[in-house]
Image (tube, rainbow, N blue to C red):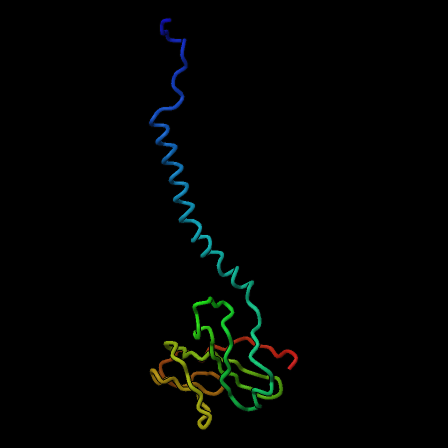
Length: 157
């Protein structure tokens, strides 16, 4: 047999086309690996917002009228290695009846924990001298605003 022009089909794949397809496949894998965290970052707030729920702080009798008390709740997004840091304090101020204010314990300036002084009816930050009135509004010092106030509701006492 002799080799003629029409006896064998031309080669369908070459080294060049194989390396092109391999490079394309590696690029798809790399883009997928980079894209998964990006999509997670973008969709994260939607996922977290749906998982939020009300957190119980205790019965009404633990918070006398006209007083501000420290309460602690467990972080709902905790992981096993959080330990004691999963217990988050907050200030609960009972105005009257079932009217409350619940404040984050952190100063609005740099996040230091504020303390409640019942004698002066003020929240004070030991780090840089920030002072807040009993309603959480800024009184003096470097904080740019008042204390962060949590949404709250009273259910079944």
